[in-house]
Length: 105
Image 1: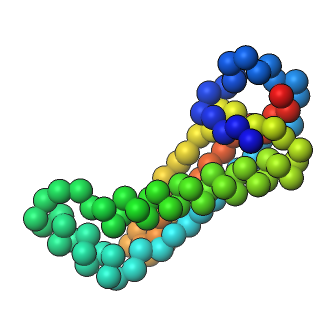
Image 2: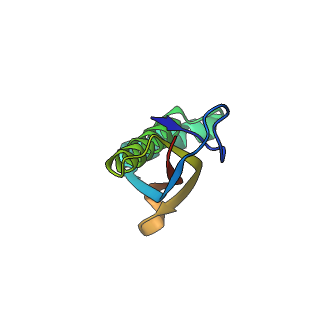
């Protein structure tokens, strides 16, 4: 299945728009990740710990988006938008929302 942020797929005309599909992934940050990320912030540099958490949440949301589109009989999801938010008390969790249009090619 093709997943793309573009509204069309070059060389593959869209035959049918099935509908909007959405998926959410929420991942909590734990105290150890926060501690090590805080140390990294003090000494400078990128926080690989948080980068991995964000990547995991993004991948989970896209996998779920693809599964939902497949259940609808889609061949692709176009116009994908990814939104990242912190939720929970004190922003203790990361939420990624993926939205797109399921289509038949």
